[in-house]
Image (cartoon, rainbow, N blue to C red):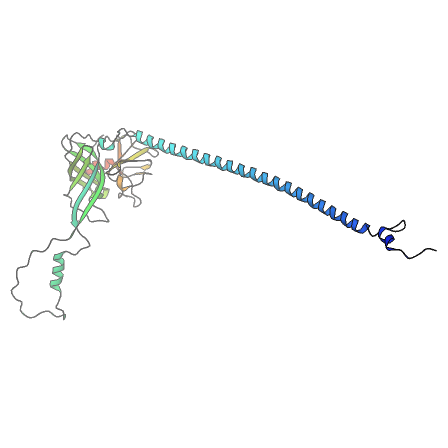
Length: 333
C-alpha cells in the first residue's frame, strides 16, 4: 500500500514519479535570460540600423552640399557670361559710332537759364486793379469827394522764378563762322512749366568750351528748334542719304550729352519708319532729347524727343529731314 503522504523534500526535489518545484524558478530564469538576450539583440540591431542611417544621412548631406556648390558655380558662370555678353553688346554699340567722343562730332549740351513770371503769383497791377474795383467795407460806394491823390510809387516788379532746362543738340549746318544747332523745341516750351521768351540766349557747351546761342527758327508742332551759334571749326554731322531710308530691323543709336555723365548712347532697333516718325525700342529719355539718332555708320536719321507724339501715343523720334521743310534752306541729299 502506497503512502499518500509526501514530504517537502520530495515535493521540492521531486522523484521518479513527479517533478519538483525547483523546475519553476529555472523556467522563469531561462525565460528571463531569453528575454534579455532578445532585447540585447534588438538593441544591437537598432544600433547598427541607426549607424547605417547616420552614414546615409551624412552622405546625402554631402551630396546636397556638392550639388548646391555646383549650382552656385553654374549661376556664377551664367552671370559672368551674361555680363560679358552685355559688355560685348555695349562695346558693339559704341563701335557702331564712328567718333570716339560725341562732343567732338558736333553733339553739344544746351543749358537754358532764365527768369520768367511766376504763374502762381498775382501781379501787383492786377491786385491793385482788383482793390480799386472793390466797394467799401459796408458794401456801398463812397459818395464823399476824394482828396487830391498823392503820387504813387512805381509798382514793384512782378514775382519771377528761376527756370533752368537742359537738352542736347547737334550741328546741322555751318558757314565757318556760325553753326546752326538742331534741338528740341521743348527746351523753350514745356507743357508743365512756363514758356520762355523766344529771344532768350541759350548756353552751348561744346568739347572746346562754352558760348551763347540764339533762336533762329522753330516748329512747335514738330518739337523742332534751330539755334544760331558762333562756333568755328565744328563740322556738321553727316546725314543718312535720302535714297537710303531706314527700315524695320535696322540698328540705331540715340546720342546725348549731359554735364554729369558726358556722352550718353542708347542703342535700339527700328520698328517702323516713315516721313513723320521713327518708331523704335529706344526709350524717349529726357537726357537724350534734342540729340541725334544715328544709324550704324554714325549718320543722322532722326532727332530724339520726349514730347513729339504725332499719333497721340508715346513719344517717337523726329525724322531729321523734317528740318528741311521750313527750318533749313539746304539739306544734304
